[in-house]
Amino acid sequence: MTSHRDDASMDAVGVSADDDITWQGDVRAGVRQVRDLDSLPLSPAERSAAQAAATRHKVRIPKAYLDLIDWTDPADPIRAQVIPSPEELTEQEGELDDPIADHAFSPVPRLTHRHADRVLLFPTYQCAVYCRFCFRKESLTSIGRGFSREALEPAFAYIAAHPEIREVILTGGDPLSLPDKALAEIRARIEAVSHVRLLRLHTRVPVALPSRVTSGLVRSLQGRLMVTVVTHFNHAREITDAAEQACSALRQGGFVLLNQSVLLKGVNDTVEVLEELCRELMYRLGVKPYYLHHGDLARGMAHRRTTIHQGQALVSALRARLSGICNPVYVLDLPDGGGKVPLGPCYVEAQDGETWRIRGQDGELRTYTELVGDP
Ligand SMILES: *Cc1c(COP(=O)(O)O)cnc(C)c1O
Ligand code: SF4
Image 1 (cartoon, protein in one colour):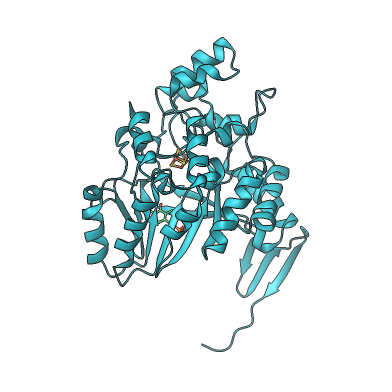
Image 2: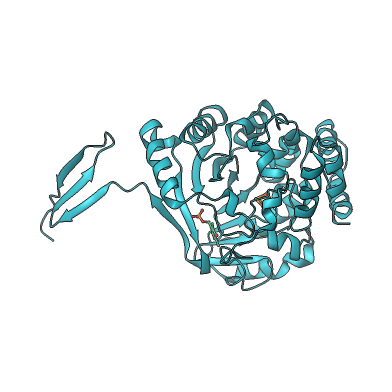
C-alpha cells in the first residue's frame, strides 16, 4: 500500500532527464515491499524471520545499496543495516518509541523546536532506504505520510513567527526522497523568512540512492541560503564511485557537506572500520565527519548497541590515529530532550587550583598550570 503511494510521489518528478530515469530504475529494481525479500538469497528461516521483523518497520532498499551486500557473509555490515533481523522482535525494558523526544518538543505538526536557534522540519516521513536501527522508526510507521503543501503550513508560520530561529533542518523521513519541485518550494518558503540563515538537510540518499543526486536536485536547493547537507555514511564500503559523484555534485553546487554516523555493533564498532570510514569521508568525498552517535534506545535494537565505554575507547583511539578534521564528535542524544552531549574522549584527569593533570595524546600524564591575568 504505502509503497505504491510512495512510488507515485517519486514519479511526480517526471522522467524528462536521463539521470532521473537512472535513479527511478534504482528504486524500482530494489526491495520496495516485504514480498520483494523473496528474491534475495536468504535461507527459509532467515526469510520468515525477516518477514516477521518487517511488520514492525518498513523495508526498502534501492538496488545500488542492495548490490553492496556480500551475501556470502551473514554478518555483512551493509546487510546488517537494511535486512530485517529476528532480533528486532526482542524489545528490552526501557527502549522507547521516541528516543530523543521529538514529539515532546513539537509545538506544531512536522516541526521540533528544542534549541532556540534551530528547528527540525519533517517534510516527509518516507525514506529512500529504511534502516533497521532508525531512531524515528515509530514515527515513520505511525505517521508515515509524505509531503503535502498543506501539512507544512503551520510549520512555516511557526518559523516566520520565531525570529530566534536561524537554522532550519530538513529531516524526516528523508528530505531528498522528495521530488525536485517539492524541494524547491520548501526551500523558497524557508528563504522567504528573513531571519533564517541556514538550511540543513539530513539525508541517506547520497549513501543509499546516490543516482538521485541529479543536477536538477542540486539546483532545487540553490538560492539565498547557506546550505549544509549532512549525509549518513556508517561504513567505508558505502563510499562508492556513485556516492563520490553524488557528493562531488553537492559540493560543486556550493553546499557544505558533513556526515553523521551511528555507532552500531557488528557494523562499525572497531577502530579500523571507523578510521577508514572517517578518513575516506574527508579525503575522498570531502565530507567532514561531524557526529558519531551512540546507539539510541530505539526498540528492538539492543543487538546493535555498544556500551558507552566501548564507544569512548574507540573515539580515543581514533583521535590518536586521525587528523583533527577527520574526527567526529561522539555524542549521546539524551532521552527526554536533554539534547546531544559529547561523551569523550576526555583527557583531563584531575584539577587542583590552577594545576591540571591532563593525559597527552601519547598516553603520558602531564601537568599544566594555568596562567591568567588579574580579573
Ligand atoms: C540533533 C538536533 C538538532 C541539531 O543539532 P546540532 O547539534 O546543531 O547538529 C536540532 N534540533 C534537534 C531537536 C535535534 O535533535
Ligand atoms: S534514512 Fe534516516 S530516517 Fe530513514 S530509516 Fe534511515 S535512519 Fe531512519
